[in-house]
Length: 253
Image 1 (cartoon, rainbow, N blue to C red):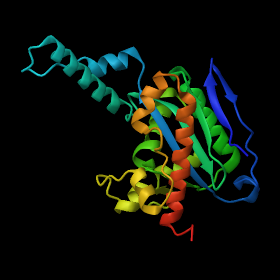
Image 2: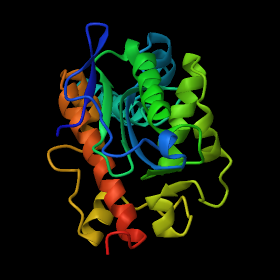
Image 3: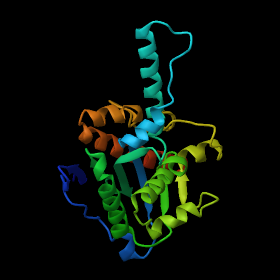
Image 4: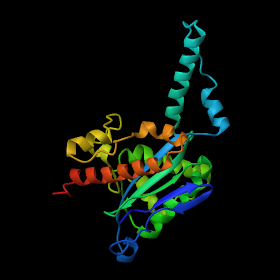
């Protein structure tokens, strides 16, 4: 049965597949926590004031004289700045969120308009709260501590969205008891020792989500209106990180 995909189009959230129906009781009904695998995709801010702030101080290399080379140098620096902006809660928009509860199929919430970022975040929270309840759940992701959860919370503050109670434990978690960050679990908690999800997938024999696109392609895909492909990529990331977690904890044996 296909997983539901909530897509933002022309100002409305539309569910484009079969509604989520758990094959067992939801955690709220069975009275216990669950595993929540999640992933966020972002783009650089589209707000003029943010873009102006980011790009205003860019200058070409002093040794360049050729106008064409000067233009190319500035363009390359602007692209680099905007790529980094997509990783910061102050200077980005979340345009797709995917989540899988326990072993159920992942669900994605995406938008082709940055102006509707708030709507997809609220729908994402509502879906998790409805199906999971207020327990100390385990949040699973790759760089989920240093990126996904952090940026999600930052965007909530910027957009005036109340942070759900069930996510609070993730920010009180000092010892990785309610978060399972595959990167930190692999490198022993060293945030500076980066390993990609793609490499972990190869090491553990898990299908990589990086087939026809990677996270670096998201902004270009979004500008081309290819939001469905972003949403599918987002869900593949969730499936992959859940599988890596199972391999790391011997759940797949």
